[in-house]
Length: 165
Image 1 (tube, one colour):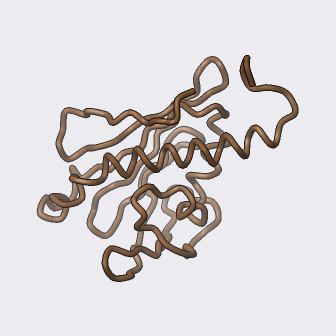
Image 2 (image 1 turned 180 degrees about the vertical axis):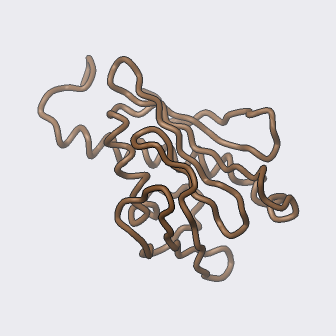
Protein backbone atom coordinates (compact mmCIF):
# COMPACT_ATOMS: atom_id res chain seq x y z
CA UNK A 1 0.00 0.00 0.00
CA UNK A 2 1.12 3.49 -0.81
CA UNK A 3 1.94 5.91 2.01
CA UNK A 4 0.49 8.88 0.16
CA UNK A 5 -2.97 10.35 0.60
CA UNK A 6 -5.00 11.61 -2.34
CA UNK A 7 -6.34 15.18 -2.23
CA UNK A 8 -10.07 15.12 -3.01
CA UNK A 9 -12.00 17.50 -5.24
CA UNK A 10 -15.43 17.97 -3.68
CA UNK A 11 -16.56 20.48 -6.27
CA UNK A 12 -17.09 23.00 -3.47
CA UNK A 13 -14.21 25.30 -2.55
CA UNK A 14 -15.37 25.40 1.10
CA UNK A 15 -15.14 21.59 1.46
CA UNK A 16 -11.57 20.26 1.21
CA UNK A 17 -10.19 16.88 2.06
CA UNK A 18 -8.08 13.84 1.36
CA UNK A 19 -8.36 10.05 1.47
CA UNK A 20 -6.13 7.05 2.05
CA UNK A 21 -6.45 3.26 2.43
CA UNK A 22 -5.31 1.83 5.76
CA UNK A 23 -4.65 -1.87 6.31
CA UNK A 24 -6.75 -2.28 9.45
CA UNK A 25 -10.42 -2.64 10.31
CA UNK A 26 -12.52 0.54 10.61
CA UNK A 27 -13.14 -0.21 14.29
CA UNK A 28 -9.41 0.01 15.07
CA UNK A 29 -8.99 3.26 13.16
CA UNK A 30 -12.11 4.75 14.74
CA UNK A 31 -10.69 4.13 18.22
CA UNK A 32 -7.89 6.54 17.37
CA UNK A 33 -9.85 9.29 15.62
CA UNK A 34 -12.51 9.20 18.35
CA UNK A 35 -9.85 9.74 21.05
CA UNK A 36 -8.85 13.42 21.05
CA UNK A 37 -5.93 12.67 23.39
CA UNK A 38 -4.16 10.96 20.46
CA UNK A 39 -4.77 13.69 17.86
CA UNK A 40 -1.48 15.49 18.48
CA UNK A 41 0.33 12.28 17.48
CA UNK A 42 -1.22 12.22 14.01
CA UNK A 43 -1.89 15.91 13.24
CA UNK A 44 -0.48 16.89 9.85
CA UNK A 45 -0.98 20.64 10.33
CA UNK A 46 1.48 20.77 13.24
CA UNK A 47 -0.99 23.07 14.99
CA UNK A 48 -2.41 20.58 17.52
CA UNK A 49 -0.12 20.62 20.55
CA UNK A 50 0.02 18.96 23.93
CA UNK A 51 -2.61 17.33 26.09
CA UNK A 52 -6.30 17.53 25.18
CA UNK A 53 -9.07 18.26 27.63
CA UNK A 54 -12.10 16.02 27.26
CA UNK A 55 -13.27 12.42 27.21
CA UNK A 56 -11.07 9.52 26.10
CA UNK A 57 -13.76 8.48 23.61
CA UNK A 58 -15.86 11.00 21.77
CA UNK A 59 -19.56 10.52 21.05
CA UNK A 60 -22.34 12.71 19.69
CA UNK A 61 -22.49 15.91 21.75
CA UNK A 62 -19.05 15.46 23.36
CA UNK A 63 -17.14 18.66 24.03
CA UNK A 64 -13.37 18.69 24.04
CA UNK A 65 -10.62 21.28 23.99
CA UNK A 66 -7.49 21.14 21.84
CA UNK A 67 -4.32 22.97 22.66
CA UNK A 68 -3.26 24.64 19.43
CA UNK A 69 -0.52 26.92 18.20
CA UNK A 70 -0.65 29.21 15.20
CA UNK A 71 1.92 31.86 16.06
CA UNK A 72 0.70 31.97 19.65
CA UNK A 73 -0.72 29.14 21.77
CA UNK A 74 -4.48 28.99 22.32
CA UNK A 75 -7.21 26.50 23.24
CA UNK A 76 -9.92 25.54 20.73
CA UNK A 77 -13.32 24.33 21.91
CA UNK A 78 -14.89 21.59 19.77
CA UNK A 79 -18.23 19.78 19.86
CA UNK A 80 -18.99 16.47 18.14
CA UNK A 81 -21.94 17.14 15.80
CA UNK A 82 -21.72 14.06 13.52
CA UNK A 83 -21.27 10.53 14.81
CA UNK A 84 -21.83 6.98 13.63
CA UNK A 85 -19.74 4.35 15.39
CA UNK A 86 -16.81 3.11 13.24
CA UNK A 87 -18.03 5.10 10.21
CA UNK A 88 -18.25 8.86 10.84
CA UNK A 89 -17.13 11.49 13.32
CA UNK A 90 -17.17 15.24 12.88
CA UNK A 91 -16.62 18.09 15.29
CA UNK A 92 -17.49 21.75 14.96
CA UNK A 93 -15.07 24.42 16.10
CA UNK A 94 -15.91 27.89 17.42
CA UNK A 95 -15.43 29.17 13.85
CA UNK A 96 -18.38 26.87 12.90
CA UNK A 97 -16.38 24.74 10.46
CA UNK A 98 -16.46 20.96 10.83
CA UNK A 99 -13.48 18.60 10.82
CA UNK A 100 -14.73 15.17 9.74
CA UNK A 101 -13.48 11.60 9.32
CA UNK A 102 -15.39 9.12 7.18
CA UNK A 103 -14.43 5.43 7.28
CA UNK A 104 -15.50 2.86 4.68
CA UNK A 105 -14.70 -0.82 5.21
CA UNK A 106 -13.27 -2.59 2.17
CA UNK A 107 -13.67 -6.26 1.27
CA UNK A 108 -10.03 -7.11 2.02
CA UNK A 109 -10.20 -5.97 5.68
CA UNK A 110 -8.70 -2.57 4.89
CA UNK A 111 -10.47 0.76 5.35
CA UNK A 112 -10.72 3.81 3.14
CA UNK A 113 -10.46 6.88 5.37
CA UNK A 114 -11.44 10.38 4.22
CA UNK A 115 -10.67 13.49 6.22
CA UNK A 116 -12.50 16.75 5.52
CA UNK A 117 -12.48 20.37 6.57
CA UNK A 118 -16.00 21.56 5.90
CA UNK A 119 -16.26 25.34 5.92
CA UNK A 120 -19.66 25.52 4.22
CA UNK A 121 -21.48 26.49 7.42
CA UNK A 122 -18.78 28.84 8.72
CA UNK A 123 -18.39 32.56 8.04
CA UNK A 124 -16.39 32.71 4.82
CA UNK A 125 -14.04 35.44 6.03
CA UNK A 126 -12.85 32.98 8.71
CA UNK A 127 -12.39 30.16 6.19
CA UNK A 128 -10.44 32.00 3.47
CA UNK A 129 -7.08 31.25 5.07
CA UNK A 130 -8.08 27.85 6.43
CA UNK A 131 -8.99 26.38 3.03
CA UNK A 132 -5.55 27.29 1.65
CA UNK A 133 -3.79 24.75 3.88
CA UNK A 134 -6.49 22.32 5.13
CA UNK A 135 -6.46 19.76 2.28
CA UNK A 136 -2.68 19.34 2.47
CA UNK A 137 -2.84 19.12 6.28
CA UNK A 138 -5.60 16.49 6.00
CA UNK A 139 -3.43 14.48 3.60
CA UNK A 140 -0.45 14.63 5.96
CA UNK A 141 -2.69 13.68 8.89
CA UNK A 142 -3.97 10.64 6.99
CA UNK A 143 -0.43 9.46 6.22
CA UNK A 144 0.42 9.86 9.92
CA UNK A 145 -2.79 8.02 10.86
CA UNK A 146 -1.99 5.19 8.44
CA UNK A 147 1.54 4.78 9.83
CA UNK A 148 0.34 4.93 13.44
CA UNK A 149 -2.54 2.46 12.95
CA UNK A 150 -0.72 -0.02 10.73
CA UNK A 151 2.28 -0.23 13.08
CA UNK A 152 -0.07 -0.76 16.01
CA UNK A 153 -2.30 -3.23 14.15
CA UNK A 154 0.51 -5.33 12.65
CA UNK A 155 2.23 -5.55 16.05
CA UNK A 156 -1.02 -6.72 17.73
CA UNK A 157 -1.78 -9.66 15.47
CA UNK A 158 0.11 -12.86 14.84
CA UNK A 159 -1.01 -13.60 11.26
CA UNK A 160 -0.29 -11.55 8.13
CA UNK A 161 -2.89 -8.98 7.04
CA UNK A 162 -2.32 -9.47 3.33
CA UNK A 163 -0.06 -11.43 0.99
CA UNK A 164 3.52 -10.26 1.23
CA UNK A 165 3.37 -9.18 4.89
